[in-house]
Image 1 (tube, rainbow, N blue to C red):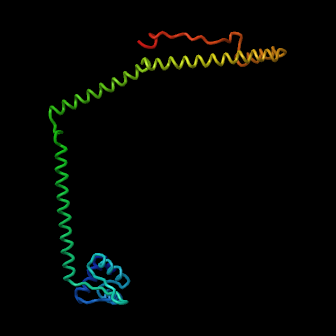
Image 2: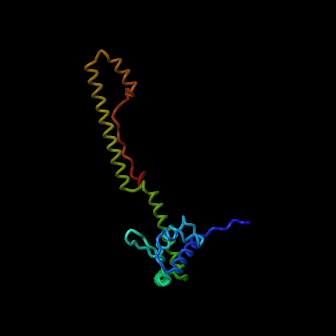
Image 3: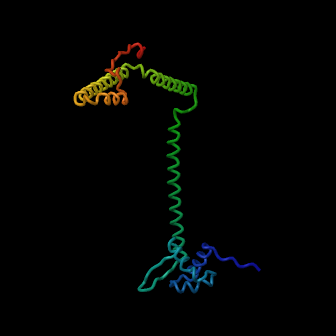
Length: 218
């Protein structure tokens, strides 16, 4: 023999509502916990089931003095269902109106985008213009080195670097002269030191050879 299946939450709610409808009376929770098992609802779950009915406005709950009473009449349930029905109808109408608005907006956005020879031709021209724009940008990058402004900036940078190098050369010559004057007995050691750091006999100021413009700008 198979074990009897327990009631679902919805079935328990229906059973408890039936207690209210049949008696049309007011109950304390402890009274409902005694009546529930007669309908197949165990006493331990009566409180939660009744509270769920209260949350859905299917059962009324009121504290009178120190006691809390529960009640529900068929007429009250009918009114509640009618209120729910009216709300659902209102929500449905609102959704329909919104759908119509969105449909109109969608149709308006589609205007001018219908497939046609003119539209296809315009799209092709736009694509060709975009491609030409990309080619011109690539060409500009290739000729960036030949830009007069870029060349002038490069020329100035070379001149600044040349001047700085010769200032350091002048400083080195001054330092060598100072060492010779103050340490004449260490001349040989100083010469070896100069060679070690790259200051050879041919060390001299840098000469700046101007580059012809034609080598940079076509």
